Length: 423
Image 1: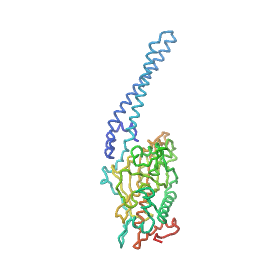
Image 2: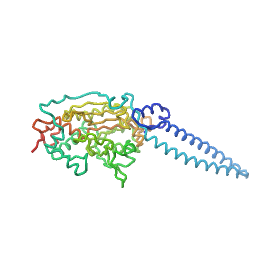
Image 3: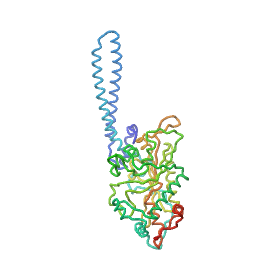
Image 4: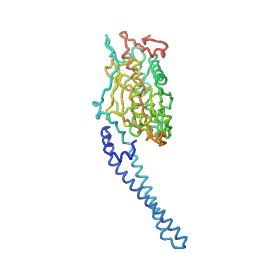
C-alpha cells in the first residue's frame, strides 16, 4: 500500500505507475476523497476548539452565578455537529481505503515500460545440451519411466493436478531437501515450516487480496485460503510488530505446497506439468533495511541462480517490464530454465523487491538507529519452484535409451542412484 501523503505530493508519478502496470484506479477520485477527509478533520478541529473555549466560558459564568443556558444549548448543537462529522469522516475514510488498496506499487526507475515485449534479458548461463536424438517432452518421458501419472491425478482431483510415482516422487523430494540445505548452509536463511492456510488479513498484507481473490482456493466455512506461495505466511510472521535495527536483515526459507486456481489461465500450457494447480516450491523471504533492499534483491537472485548452476541447467535472467510485474512489486527478475523437450524457457523463479508496500499493508516496522520507527522492506523469491525444475531435469538429462540421468548433487538425496530407468 502506498503512503497517502506520498500520493498527495506525487499524483503524476502515481498515475504513471498505474498506467504502466495496466491498472485502472483513478487517482483523482482518491485525491478528491482525501480533500473531503481533510476538510472534515479541519472542521471538527475548529468545532472542538470552539467547544473547549466555550466550556471555559460556561465555567466562568457559573462561577459568577450568571446565566449560561444559551451557551450550553449552543454546545449541544456543536456536539451534535461533531458527532455527525465523525460519522461522515468514518464513511469517507472507509471509501478512501477501498480505493487505496487498489493502487499498485511504484516501479523502480530502471524498469522498462511495457508488457512482455519490453522484458529485458540481463544475463545467460550455461551451454545448451546437444542431443543425437529427438529430445522428448517430459510427459512422454515421465509416462515411459512410470514416474509421472497425469490421468490418475485428474481422476483423483481434476485437470491440472499431477501424480508423481516412485523415483519421480523421490526426485522432487530430493530437489526440495537439496535446495533447503543449500539456502540454510550457504546463504544464511533460517528454515520455517509455516501453515498452509491463511486468514484474510494475512492474504491482504502480501497483496493477494483483494486483487487476486479469484485465483485462490477458499474454505468458506472458516474463511481461510490455501496459500498460493510460502511468501504469504512468511511475510506475516512479523505482521503488526516492530523489529530492532540490529535484527535486520532477516532471511527465511520454507518448502511448501502451493495452491492456485489460476482462473485467468484456462487453456494455457494444458499438456504436461508446466501449469498445475498444486505444486511444491522452496521460497526465500527477506526483511531488510530500506537503504539496502535493492542490493539485497541482487543477492537474492544470486541465491536462486546457485540452485540452477549446481544442477547444471541452462538458464537466463529476465528483468520484468512494468506490465509484467506483480501488483505489489517494485522490481522483479525472473529466472527461466531451458527445457529442450518442449523447446522453450520456463520460469522457475521470480525474485521481487516490494519496498515498503507489503510492510505498510501488514504494519511491519523497525526502530532505526535514529530511534525512529520506519517500515521495513520485504523481498521474496522462488529458490526455486517445482515442477518446472523437474521438467528441466527430465528433459535436459534424458538419454537416448529413455532413461534420465540424476544430477550429481541430487544423488546423495536419492540413496546414491545415478539414473532413473524403467525397472
